[in-house]
Length: 133
Image 1 (cartoon, rainbow, N blue to C red):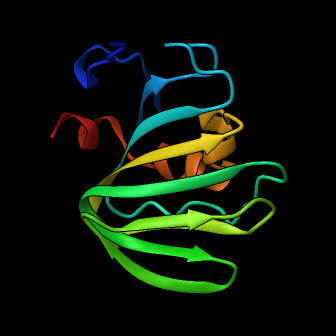
Image 2 (cartoon, rainbow, N blue to C red; image 1 turned 180 degrees about the vertical axis):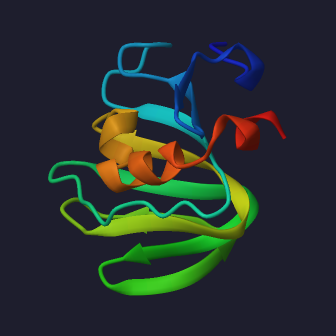
């Protein structure tokens, strides 16, 4: 059995966003799939974006926020699954609390493709004192 535990997954920190790479293309026998665990702090909004060739599924595992897919915005909470077809504009946002979700992509995409420059700028606005809390 091929298993990667969350505690053992490589981590990409991008400002205050944390991306646990559970499975990248070519790992654990996968050829066309990547799976990440995303931790998104409160007050972060993802840029509206699309992946021309890729399907993506988000499963919210804790917290709550909103997802916009093809112009439809809905509240999402733990246990919800959101399917994003190829070439479909989508984004995720958090409110007063953060959220964690599992993102599955085929073909695989990188964290920089998942989050746009606006999120990086918003996350960078948090000072060192905020990170120490």
